[in-house]
Length: 327
Image (cartoon, rainbow, N blue to C red; front, side, top):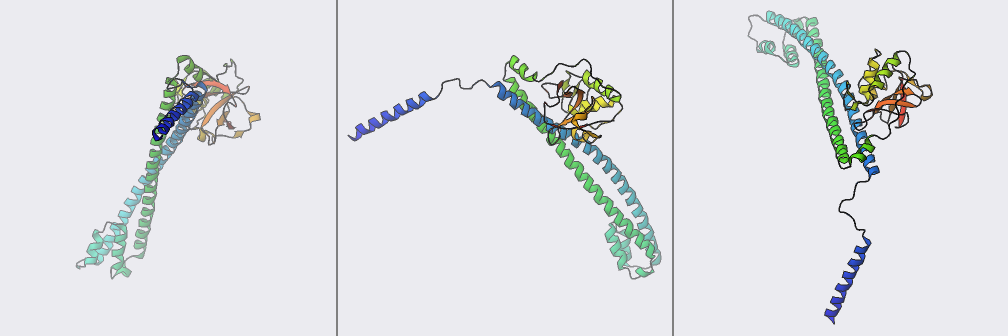
C-alpha cells in the first residue's frame, strides 16, 4: 500500500508539470526586439550621452579658466617669493652687521633659515631684537604672510584643476559607454527598422527663413549644416554637437558664444516664447543640456543626436525651458 501511494503521487506530480507546461507559450529562445522599446532605449541612451557631453563642454570651459587663473597665481607667488627673499637678505645683513665678530648660534641659525616662519622665530629670539629696525621686521612679516596667502590660493586652484580634469575623464567615459550601448541596440535590428528609428521626427526643411540683421547670418549657417553628422564635442566643419552648432552659427554674425548649452543660456537676454524670432537660441531639459536655434513657424534647427545629425524639428519636440537672444 505504501509503494502504491508513492507511485500515485509521482504520477500526479508529472501530470501537474504537464499542465503547467501547457500554460507557458511556446516561442523562440530569444524574442525579436520590439521596435518601440528599442527606440525608447536608444533615445534614453542618446540623452544620457548628450547630458554627459554638455557636462564635458562646461567642464572644459571651467578648466581653461582655472588654468589661466593658476598661471596668474603661480606668477604672483613667484614674484612674492622673490620679494620675500629680498627682504630676508636685508634682515640677515642687518643682523650679521650688528653681531659681526661674535659667535652667536642664534644668529647663525637665523641666517641659514629658509622657512619664513622659522626665520621669524629665530629673529625674535635674538637678545638685541629691540635694536633691529622695527619697520624691516614688520615688512618681512607682512611679505611672509602675503606669500602664504598666495601659496594657499595656488594650491587650491591646482586642486580645482585636478578635480575638473577628473570630471572631464568621467564625462568622456559616460559618453563613450552610452553611445556604444545605443549602437549595440541598433545593430540588432534589420536595416529598414534601424533606418526608421534614426529618421523619425524629421520635418521638411523650409526653403526660406524670415531672419534679419545679424541673425540672418547665424540662421543661414545653421540651415546649411542640415544633414551634417552629430559628434559629441564637435564644432564643425562637417560635424557638430548641439552647442557647437549654435556657437559656430552665431560666430558667422560676429557673436562669440561658449561651447556649452548651459553657458549659452546665460549669454544674452532671455525672451518669452511668444516673442521668439529666427536666430534666437532655445533650450531644453532641466538641468539644461540641449540647445537649438529657432527658425520661425514653430520650428528649430539643431544638432539632435548621433542617429539624426543636424535636422529641423518642432519647437516642442523636447521639454522646452526658455530662450535667449544673442548679440
